[in-house]
Length: 289
Image (tube, rainbow, N blue to C red):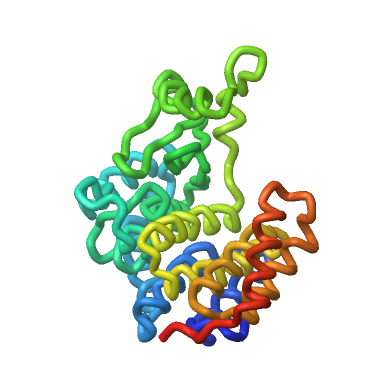
């Protein structure tokens, strides 16, 4: 469900939508890189992907053909975190560029999920099957080795013990009431995440940032992508409608809010949104420029 009235690049959105249309051979890194087209319409996606390939091939050329998984992992960690210098942006964690892959590649600074995407791609090209983990509050990566599973923090490059993971999870459990009889095992939170939902989490970071800044045009670009990425997530259609309303695009806003209410008539926010929809219908406004 797309919005032809959106003030975002049609070609950039269509490119993204085509990339995420199918789950088979989902091009996670390419789709993530393409988000940067909103800020840099002339961004050369192929050049960014080629640069990542070059980094991977440089490491691969150093590894013996018979190198085991442990040897490859150690080499990858030295290369990625020490030699290339990728690390978390502790000084400006909430900057949008931390979620734009081409900028992370340039600055070597990012947030856990953007660093994880680059780490996972290089790992894959040297024969390591590293998976993303949508851990509460902090994206992680994991890898199964002959001696057991390794869980790593891509922000710091450190492997995490079970005790460290339990400690990180405890505040989330407390907030969600997952204690006592409702306790959830750690393993539940360490399941690998599908590429589509990794990308959705990355977009969700930008969504939260742009909403806080009230940057409605950029937020609309993210909402368009989330609707294309998660076509059954009617909450994303709702949120796109609210952004369209902020931009004075009342007609498509009404369409989105009506669609949400039709699919979620019993939602807790349905009465409030119904009132908002009636207001849009009765009080048309000029477009924002």
